[in-house]
Image (cartoon, rainbow, N blue to C red; front, side):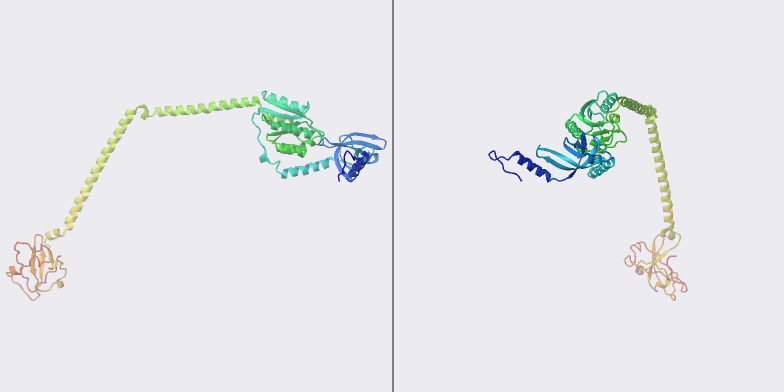
Length: 450
């Protein structure tokens, strides 16, 4: 709760400091983590500064000697510790400090457990997915390098890169690569290089070190900053066995700074050799293709149709004449066979014709209706019949079995059938018909055509 004051009614300093002390006292005891610096002991009290491992923040801590010596192993300068503290505010001096109630060194196992939990958290967010990693440019114009001040890692990257490609350009950002300022400086340098449009790839390089020395490169702030970069990032931290979280989020992981130089910059000698090999291969391919085409052209030109075109035309003309003669012969032969077949068919028709049968002496007996008489019982006595011969027709009368006719008896002209009475058209001609002699009584009536 704020206290109302004014220039006319100010509060004494003792009252303000007492109020501050009361507010701080409400915090109670807390567990804090930090790195020990400025460690000293005077009498029964140990004085130290507890610094935040990431931010530039620190606080004074006083510990009874017994509390300090109870920590196993005994903390030293640079050690990471977890301290159970109680905030104290001295009203007389207006100073603030923590009083340590218990000190616990942070072991390697605990650090690894914390890193594993952070790795799982970032992996669940997809920061380590392979599909979000970008390919490095083949030949970057400018390479951004983040490294320690005058470090061996810087020399390795620069010398190996320029040995491989002398024209490569670097923009170097020298920062603290360990300690409490490392995370902030590396993150700021990363953002600066990422904002530079001329920088096409960024290399973060550091030599080997202990787990505690490499902790800044597993910091969540730095890892998220690398994941947010638009420029491809190469991680070259420590040696082959070292694996900070920066290696997992970077687009390319290099085992050493020298390996980073090999991955970022191509070797000019290797590229010249490759260009030479590709050029020779292209020449062989083109030369082989030209040789094949020349061989094909030579073989085509040697063909008779191109070597002597007139002879080819003459040969084609001879083939056309031969085919024409063959067609003529084939057509004539077909016509001859058709004519022979037609003559044979005509002869068969003549042989099977009723007219030919009549020419051999046979006759056809017909009723007046034109129907052919096939059986004697079909003819009634006294019925007029027409007998067709090979050259003409006769009209006769059928007699009963009891009647007889002398050879001199004939039909009178009045008994001759007119053309209308005959069953078939033109059955009786205009010429006089010879009378047929009557048959003896014992003779049977005509049975029709045989």
